[in-house]
Amino acid sequence: MTWTELPPGLILIAGGLLAAVLPWRLRQLLMLGLPVVGFLQLLAVPEGSYWTTEFFGAELVGSRVDGLSLIWGYIFYIAAFIGAVFHLHVNDRMQDVAAMTYAGSAIGAVFAGDLLTLFVYWELTAVTSAFLVFASRTDESYRAGIRYLLVQILSGVLLLGGIALHWRATGSVAFESMTLSGAGPLLMFLGIGVKCAFPLLHNWLPDAYPRATPTGTVFLSAFTTKMAVYTLARGFPGTEELIWIGAAMAVFPLFFATIENDLRRVMAYSLQVQLGFMVVGVGIGTELALDGAAAHAFTGVIYKGLLFMVLGAVLYRTGSAKASDLGGLARAMPWTMALCLIGAASISAFPLFAGFISKSLILSSAGKEGYSLVWTLLLLASVGVFYNTGIRIPFAAFFAAPKVQRGPVAEAPANMVIAMAGAAVLCIAIGVAPEQLYRHLPFQSDYQPYTAAHVVTQLQLLAFTGLGFAWLLHAGLQPETRRGTVVEFDWFYRRGLQDVWRKVIEWAGETSAALKGGMLDWVGAVIATTRRLADPQGLLARTVTPGTSVLWLTAMLGLYLLVYYA
Image (cartoon, rainbow, N blue to C red; front, side, top):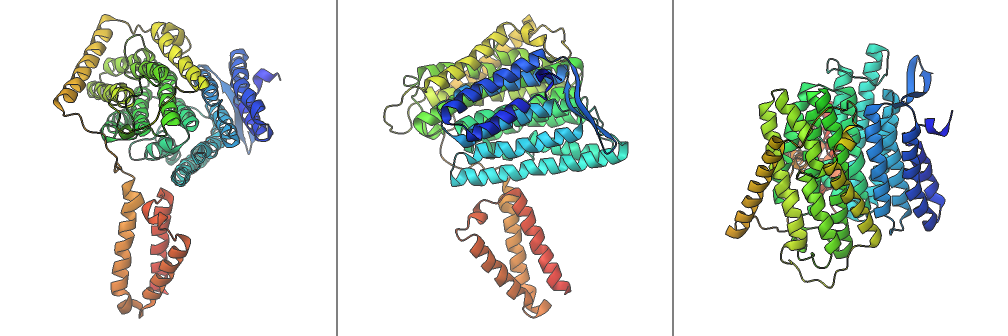
């Protein structure tokens, strides 16, 4: 057994744990060196299965290397290296350890050859990534991190329950293609959907990502959701339900992004849109579509990482990433502005940039397989992404009139600029020479993105969207960016259930005397007193996690039934 046959990702996990006891300068070298060594390992390891063993009659495969896992492994190591460069100026042991162990866990997951090994890495990513949210060390980030961690653990519980049912039904934990024909696959599908930010299961993403540190957001944008897309591509390719789920994912976040003030949250919504494209590709399930999903995951990690780095640099220098606090930064941060424009062109799918050569694969697959409505919805999503991300983010941060008075602003630190420049070079290189990416895709589809029809259609879409933005701006109809809170679906379980419980308490108070001679009044007083002691500042009433909302309501209803039937 040579070092190349070690489970991919283990190098980063071990190195991340070692970083917990090293001084800052050594941690810097370690964070730069670990992704390089891991990437070299991937280049050297032959395809095949490694670290196989028996566990209660089931075969475990600790590492499976093939075309599908390799493309995700390559981009994950590239993202870890770029993120490490971006982070070099920060002396924070918590972020160093969390970032490397998180990246290693995500890499381990995409090379897992069985479902139990997948689950172990799945939960490791949940725990380690939460610390990148906690690392902001604010009350807001702490509460967001708790909500994020609860949702991620819920995803793992659903996955594990599905694995157990699937194991009992089939006698196997092999991580292969499945159908939604049994309770096990359905539970696994739902657990993956939580981590992939399916519609109505997505609120953890725009809630947590903008509250992480600048470095944390870059790492978070690269791994969790892309790992989930890989799991869908491995376990549920060709599942038609994914086509419509992905189409919904690509469209509905646009409406929230349009009115959002926090530009990092706008990017989080744009990330969901790009996930929708990938999920559509997995759902179509042809070789061309699966190559499109893999290519879009690869390019998406780079250009979304670039834009999150740009906003992280802006946040680092100005203290804010909100449109209402920014504007006029083009002269103060010219390098960051130029690199932002490259990222904006990439995510908007301009020809000769990375987004164009990956998005075209998925659009062509949808058209070729006769999904005209899906193709139209994806085209609409492309318009929205160009408007919200390709135009609005650079304009609001760099070119709009300054919204607030502020002192001199310096360019981003050198390591931040170098990291952004590296991502920008990849965006251009992949766009100019797409065959260099296509030859590493799982099925190596023979596809030509630069046909007259593809280029002209995309340029028309971009031109009319740009003209629309210019007209709205000139006519004074462009929505004004202002401070505020966008009410999302999570309101129903963070505040809506609180209102339901309040009504239950009111109803219980009115009927308690008739039911049990005042017993419920006594119980209600105990509950109210306990709640005041546990939450003296009323934080729970203002910010309730999905888990605590459901548990609180269930516990209280259970207590009421216990008293009633006592």
